[in-house]
Amino acid sequence: MVEFSEAVKYRDFTRRFVVKSEKTAEGKLYSAFNQINDVYKNISIDQALQHQYLNKVINMLDTAIIFYDADSGKVIWLNDAFKDLFQVPHLGNISGMEKRHPELYQKTMQLKVGKHQMETAHSSKGKIKLLMQSSGFETQDGSFRIIVYQNINEAIDETETRAWHKLLRVLTHEIMNSIGPISSLAETLHDRLEHWEGEQEIDDLKLGIFTIKRRSEGLLQFAKSYRLINKVDQPQFSEILVIQLFENIYQLLEPTLIQKNIDVDIIIKNTRMILRADLNLLEQVIINLLLNAIEAVKEVEEPYISLSAIETRDIIQLKIQDNGGGMSPEIQEQIFTPFFTTKKTGTGVGLTLSKQIMLMHGGNISVDSKEGEGSTFTLQF
Image (cartoon, rainbow, N blue to C red; front, top):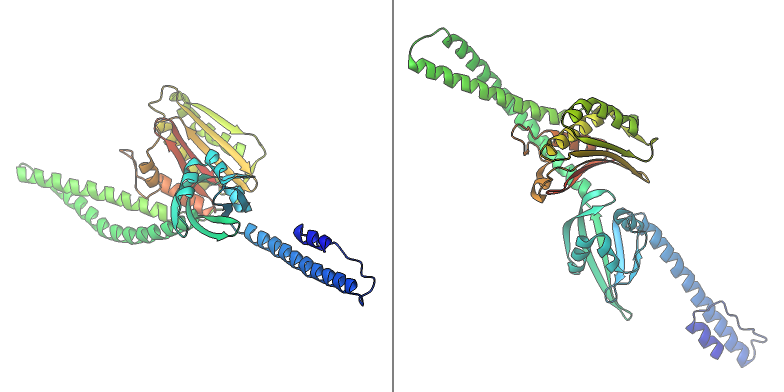
């Protein structure tokens, strides 16, 4: 009886009791012990298989999940998506998140059970939007929490893109149909009035019509910008040697960089890094970002720009960094919105077009910037 009690206590269900004769009371008891051990052993095997099955299923999810003790903070379990997204190979206690992701840790601790909220966080995929959800339960062993972090960047990008594509088609059609005839009529009237002389009223009329023509041409250009965003060609994918891509773009902009006394670094450890993309479209994106960086560092005493490439597993990131004046969080939230610009002569098309091109590549573009410290744009494939 003592041996059986110890076996149950320590969950040692491999222990067998020798049954010399099932006719004796001792033999019947030992036989019953063996049967109980077999039942518990099978239950343990089933539980282990279910646990392995559950682990495999949850590790296949793209959603990051962490399960921890609410009282001690001890991490019971976290899935592969959590490790990859937050670059945390191991986490013994939930408080360990504070070192790598202090803001996200605070939001996690403040999130009430049964609630959800959206937060911006830094991850292996750059700056992303997360939908955080919390659930909890209690057992005789204590209170436990399960936190789910869902990356909703792609869903937001897809929704935004569909919305402004529809808007672009409508506005382009209406603007082009309305302004073309107005511009033509204004130009005709202006040509006729060139032959009239003398009267002040005629001069005023000429000035007014010229103003109409100039404004109409401006609106036509505005509509062309809409059309530019809305009609990006489908990517023609090919294998691109990243170091060659960087060097070609640098050679193109080298005269401008030298003239403005801007130091440029190309940083890439793996000089054989290959990227599948549309060369022309990708060059267009990087050149646009570099021109923005050149503009950003024009007031800096020692202007600096870097081009770098990082490869992690199946993800490639191209980064364009500058030491310019940086941007406020409010501006960062708006810079990819069509026609938003902080430049006096800007159209607000460049970054929107860049985002459209990156989405067509199945990737994304993000910005990380601090006022007074500079900006980093990341192209992720």
